[in-house]
Length: 240
Length: 217
Ligand SMILES: Nc1ncnc2c1ncn2[C@@H]1O[C@H](COP(=O)(O)OP(=O)(O)O)[C@@H](O)[C@H]1O
Ligand SMILES: [Mg+2]
Image (tube, rainbow over all chains, first blue to last red; front, side, top):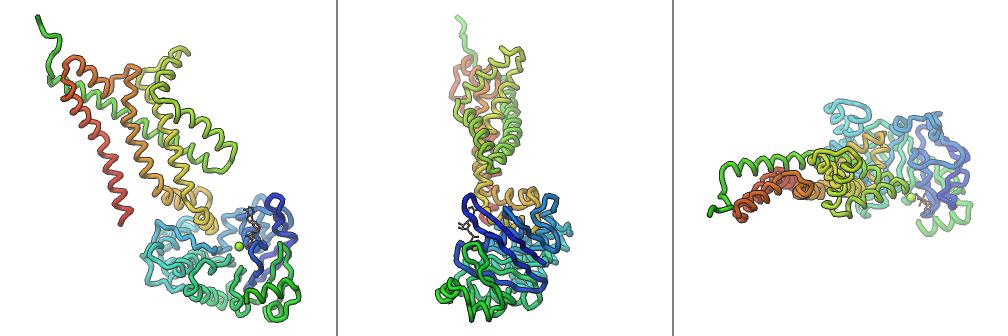
């Protein structure tokens, strides 16, 4: 379970998160939607401690993410993160990209790590690309590689930050398919997205962000078909 | 009347090779220690701490901009005046180490800077510690940018080691000058000395060529 309590975050004078409360249960898929600059990415980075926080609390399975004694490297193994940019390691093959963290962090032998990697790459449909370098893969394939790389650490949660926004339109589908597959396998996911059909079809809940405030949250049919917040109504009509 | 000049002899070749050996010693020590020290400075600058970066830059700028010859003479005189005279080899090599380090620091800093921050964040998100990420992502990716520039610095260090002759150390260049004066066969000697410098640098050049080959494949 991921719990955000009265989470505050500022960049200098700019308050980006203004007291967010949100609980994500195991097995849930929560989509975060909202205008660019509303604080969605920052929220994810407060969960995996890429950003520090200024107030409130974030706990993951009861562990206070931002407490002094927390082993953040260990905690991050539970939190797979996929960014807008796929960030493939350019000097490694697909197989080595995925095997690196199991080998270095989880201390699997090279052979076992590669076995794990091959399994995850096959899972995301890249079983025939094991020995390709990232430069030989399309954006969609590299983003699936990034998902496999995160899955290889056997995370409890997956955080997606606009995972399809940097892709050519014709490559978006293959990545969304993998995300759908993960959701159907019961993965707990927090998904920042502009793909409204994905949010509507896959999410258990949709949360609308407005200038650092969680303005509306609920089942997709309520939030997306019957929005109460006037800004959400405007947002949905422009994007949908 | 006897000629004051004498012709080249076999013993002169030995004399040159002894000079070459000293050039190799100065170069190898300066490149190795200069690179290690430069890595530390380059890393310090990459920490994005304004104060540290400013302090390191200020110090290194001095070493980068004052001509090496002047640094050598100043340092050599300074240690002598301060009452710790060093053998010419060491006062020369210490200056060359610091000079090389100041150049390597820039190379290392830009190598680290060339690694996309997203790549580093992605590695950290997989649970890698700062040093695991440094070792397995930043180093190999940054080396692609840094290695060719480092090679340039290392080759320059070999050539710059000739300046240590200014404080009286008889390395390859100084040895050749001594022979020039005695034999007046400067063209022959310079050809030979040029060839020896080329041979000393050859392993590094080969390393560069092999690296480029590997990048292409
Ligand atoms: N590292 C940072 N330093 C300063 N301002 C930032 C930083 N990261 C994000 N911001 C600002 O915080 C606000 C929220 O950003 P972000 O969380 O990326 O929004 P979103 O993901 O919803 O588009 C924006 O105004 C952005 O400019
Ligand atoms: Mg964002």
